[in-house]
Length: 262
Image 1 (cartoon, helix red, strand yellow):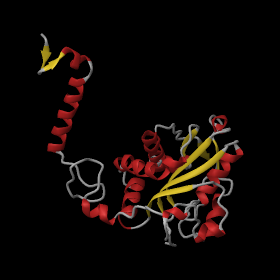
Image 2 (cartoon, helix red, strand yellow; image 1 turned 45 degrees about the horizontal axis):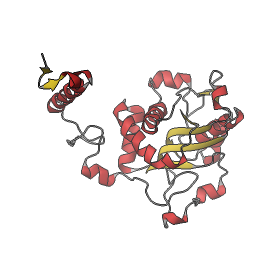
Image 3 (spheres, helix red, strand yellow; image 1 turned 30 degrees about the horizontal axis):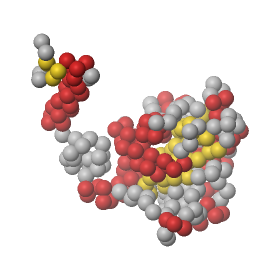
Image 4 (tube, helix red, strand yellow; image 1 turned 180 degrees about the horizontal axis):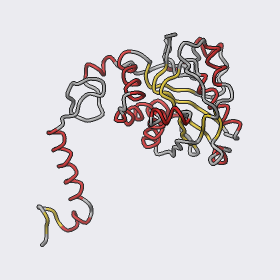
């Protein structure tokens, strides 16, 4: 038989049949289970997208931003690099920081859903948003790693939302990501309700390189990924762990940046 469903043998061998079958399967699924907005129940054309209303309320960070933490700044992007008030007064151990969204409104709901609601579907589009923010920082030797959870918290939550983001970011940038590059060496209490100084004290010495992966850090550019940055204490502890293992340079990327005390 020279063709299958109107396709030549070459097309079948080349995978066109599989591609069209997958497309048909996707169409059937979209008909039975129409895709919905990542943040609400509004129907959308493509899975993993926001409806127009939620898109308009999602505080994407564009234009001029702080070079250390990614917080949005007033001014012309041509003025970059600039530092926000926090980063002018707090020593950041990393070199550059970028954020995709400002914490609040739809962004806050997305983070909470990803972190506590088993909404793994948010990770892929969030990784693409992060990729747009950090692409200029990527090097040939960049290794992407999430801020780690303590093993007991990981057991309770069942997944590390930062690891999901790091994997999605790595896929978008075609760079390797290692979910357990760093580990929590001790269990820390929640950061909620702590002063800025208390947050840094709570994380002091709580993160280290995984013994199995430490050699992979040496001489490399490490891009650390987290879902939220408030004081920066967790990212600072993770950065110091990377430098102790011989990292050449460390940058950070967060899905959302808190720009006011909550």
